Image (cartoon, rainbow, N blue to C red; front, side):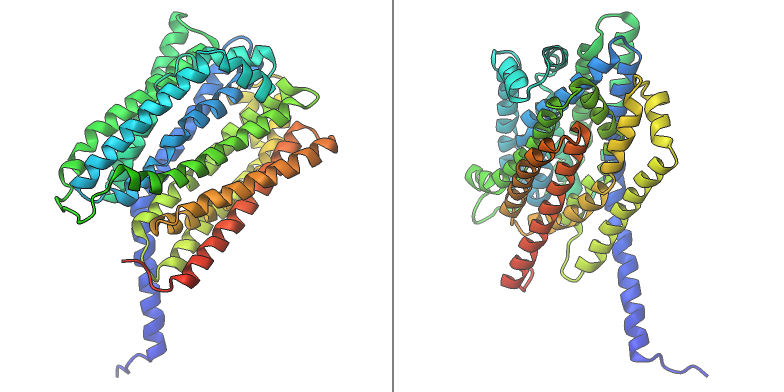
Length: 449
């Protein structure tokens, strides 16, 4: 005889079904984005592997540690075009406005790169601001000189990727990043075998070719998404002023975020053995980035999938992703696989693998912190509360500026100083994001339409 199911059993079953369906939706959008970030993270691994095959590997590894914060700092105005495109790319009218806005930003970052790299500003910035040794600064310049349109290419593909995420077409994004990795490997290997370029000039040329190839691929595959955008005239068109108002806080937060490696690089350059310490920090950061990178896809997934009532399920999903990666980093250190990777794959010079392994252990909490931050960033951006991200990063930077002098005065060593400052910054940023979200929810209990 079949008895009717008790009401609380039905409620529990409904909740289980809801969690399963929500998790499935998240995975469908998230995993191609995460795979894209993983492919992108291999760019640094490939660069270090190439450096390991050439002379002066320690100097070039330190120079790569200077290239990336400078290049990404210049790139900062276009980085958040991914979130802007995902949030606002809803119809053909907005597409036209977003395209004009993107082209303006692309022109600006290209101008900024040329201004910093090809004028006397570079030795001032690299030598006096970052306090890099002269040989490291020059090695980095040989790579940056090959990358004038690198940031513009990044901006174009991130804008179009945002439109694709909005439409739920995320699988081609991971293929695009694979194209990028193959292009970098092919161009880098070709230049190495033909001896046309060497050192960081080879790396810079390969990185430019890689991001250009990815941007071209995304441009082609996004045409279908663009063609399918609905024609929905709006009472208040999306003007450039509205776009700047939405995007500038995101750019401001990214600029603040990208000052972090600049401050850390400067602190390491003040250590007893700056070249060795910076090379070890760069080597560890490259592998650590591979663990952290999949968490960077979470904000756009949250923006795409957020609905009232889903918050808890999405938070658990994000937390589990971060926790698994943090545990994996600790396990890699405890088993000694990190030293093996640095010594055998990266071909790091003697003294670097052990220091890099210690730096990697200090970085272990970052994936968990990044994952939960991705959850709050996605929620806040989906509700257009973009200023919260800038506030959070401003507080994080303040934490760095306070912690660095203290740890430097204690003579803890460049790697320890940088690691402590990085963890302090992430904890402060996460706390501020969570506070901003809770404050906004109290003032706006009803979700936005």
